[in-house]
Amino acid sequence: MNKKLIWLVAAKDIRGITSSAQVWLGLILLPLIFSVIFPLAFILLVKNVPITSPELIDLVNKVVYGLKDTESGEMIGSLPSMKHQIIFVVVNYLLGSIFLLIPTINAMMIALHSFVGEKEKRTMETLLFSPITVKELFIGKVLSAFIPSIIITWVSFFLFGIITVSLTYNMFGYFIFPNANWLILMLWVVPMITILTILVNVFVSARAKGFQEAQQLGGILILPIMGLFIGQATGFLVIKPIFLALIGVIILMLNFILLKMMTKYNDRNTLFEKQI
Figure 1 (cartoon, helix red, strand yellow):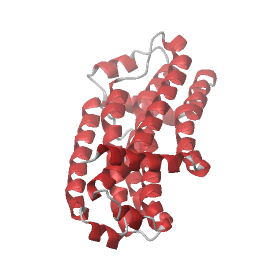
Figure 2: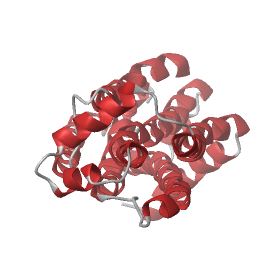
Figure 3: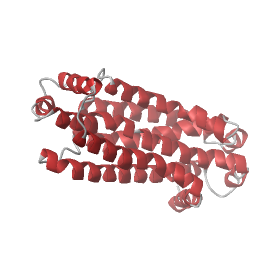
Figure 4: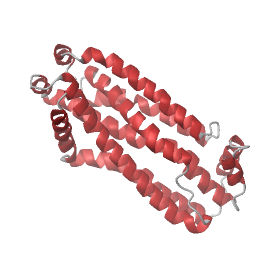
């Protein structure tokens, strides 16, 4: 396996992404909202406006109940005011799941831009007949989607942390972020779900006729994330570190299954017919 060729393919696709202002705008808009605008507005609002929402209070009570007999549940229950509890619960038990939309949507956009873009520009034939193996081509294109998605997600996490800590340290007297949930999410679940998104979109791009169709089909991965968020927002589901670790293991198994299924594409003729 020629690593130089793999990185050449990845670098070519990354340059194609960075050279498009429209693509870049789509990649940074969602992270900007979730990592900067929303936490800034939410924390300042809760700190400075009287809490009158029974839904927020009910959510906090459900999370505390779901964490009963745990150190986290006791700690949340011992916070001095409902404002402290709301900020702590939303930051550490609600925003994590919605944060998964950043790597999922960005990986989907980049992967589709890479695979379907080659199909629409009719340049995949040139790559297939170049002196590079199918495996090297595939790995290079996966890296071209994985690396920018992970970097953008981790930068968003860093910005989110700076804003959260700077706005809450004086209020709490200690760092409320990151907790175990966030660390497992960023170091384990995010890489796994990014790879899953890319692999799913490889299959989608092989069958889609154009970018819009592929985007609609690939967007199906967003539904479980939204279900996870709704489950938390309604108090029906309280995510604990062990649960996040298990989600990562399940996604890892799905990745292996997809890679196994994808071995049938390790043939130039098949790739040429499917026009991945």
